[in-house]
Every structure is written in structure tokens, then in C-alpha cells.
Amino acid sequence: MTERRIFRRIRGMDTADGAGVKLKRIIGQSALDMLDPFLLLDEFRSDQAGDYLAGFPEHPHRGFETVTYMLAGHMQHGDNHGHRGDLGPGSVQWMTAGRGIVHSEMPQQENGLMWGFQLWVNLPAKDKMTAPRYQDIAPDKIPVVHLADGVEVRVIAGDFGGASGPVRGVATAPIYLDLAVQPGATVSVPLPQGHSAFAYVFEGEAARVAGETLSRGELAVLGKGESVTIAGGEAPARVLLVAGQPLREPVARYGPFVMNTTEQIHEAIADFRAGRF
Image (cartoon, rainbow, N blue to C red; front, side, top):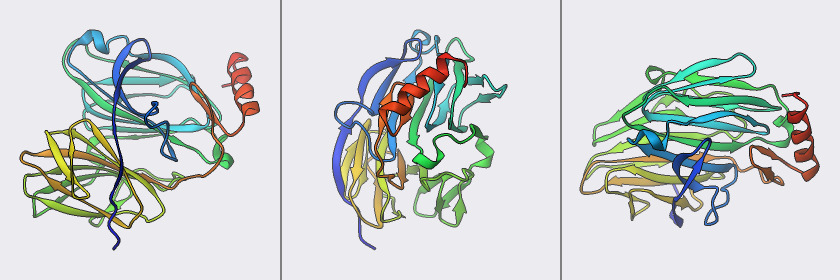
């Protein structure tokens, strides 16, 4: 199989979102506006309550999907369609906003570590006005593949090592893996050749990705190929490996709305203001 190499390296920028939640924005910033079909990747990590306590009060979405992966802490979400749920450590929410939803994500703790990711995944034009839906996935529903060479992989979406992730029915055929790699361990991960892909080191000092050292907090945009090799560094590390089928469609973005044309953005704003979400 053809090995993917690192095409670009990106570091997150400090910013705030919601009602002032401090976070690192990795995709969706000036250095990497998007990686089709991925529109945004944020990492939020703090044990200071003032950095996250205000949360993400009610806000709208249309035209894409949000993926929340919690590593530590407790977040409650709810929406204007009556859906409620809790996100605790190890849980995933894959929300398809579709034609429109108004929801909130609020911390359910006043101290301790709040840590996780939010990824935005674009929807194809034909699905942008689909009915909203959630895939709420508890930690015990995510298969874990243990490799004898010191690699443990949580399979959130896609297939790996004979396991299939619980996320279903997503147009971009995503791969979403959380790899824990011990020092000296190596794993080769197959990836669909046409998919856009990135790796992000989020725990440990560094890992080896595609033969290069990638440090904590650094994202590697991967080039073309059928697989990528990830190896441990001098200490245990964890790496997000995410891939998806590019849509190659026009993108019109305005805050929480992602459509194909400016006219559709105007329609989204008008529909939201008129209470049609």
C-alpha cells in the first residue's frame, strides 16, 4: 500500500467560543481554513472553571454535522426539538444539523478537568436540508482494538482491526480513530485513498506520524496514499486519526450556517429569525 506522508503541519490558535469557553482552534483558522469535508476542529482543555463554566448556550446550526468527543468532564446538551442527553468521559455525539436546529451544550460541573474535541463535518448539497438527527454514543458502545505491539485503538467511525465504529449513515464515509501508542510500538492504519486525512497528537510529548515526529498540539495534514504509519515516541502518546470523503462542492459559511451559496445563507438567517428551525 502507498504510504501517506505529512503534507502540512498546523498548530492551534487560542480563541474563545460560546459564552467565552477558551479553546484551541486547529481547523477553521487562518493557517487552515478547512480540509474538505472538515470545516472546524476545536480542542477544549482546562481545569479552570472560569475557562469553560459559561458553556455554549442556545445557538443554531444548519447544513453540516457536529461531532463532540469527550475525554474528561460532563456536558449536557438539549435542543428545540426536545432532545436531551449527557456527554461524559469517553462518549461521542454525532449530530446532523441538517435543515436546522437550535441547541445548547452546558457543563455539568463547577470544578475539575473539562477536555474534549468538536469537529465540524460538511454535508453534501443533497443532504443539507435533511431532518436533524443525533447519534449519542456511550463509551461502552465504542469498540476497542488491542494490538499485541502496544497499540490500543478506539474505533468511533469506520473500520479497523476487524471492528466497526458505531457511527452510521454519514455521507462522507468518515474514519475517526483514537490511537493510544506505547513507546516503541508501531501501527499501520489503512485509509481510503481518496479521503482527506489528518492526525493530531493530543496526549504525550510526541508521536511518530508518517516517519516524522509530531509534537503534542500539532496537526498533520496527510497527503495521498492508502495507509499511514503511527509509532510511539519516548513516552506513551495518543493520536486522533480522522479521514473523510471530500465533497468538492462550493462552500458558503456564515457563523453556524454552512451552505453552498450566499442566497442559501440569507435563507438560513431568515428561517432562523422567523423561528422555522
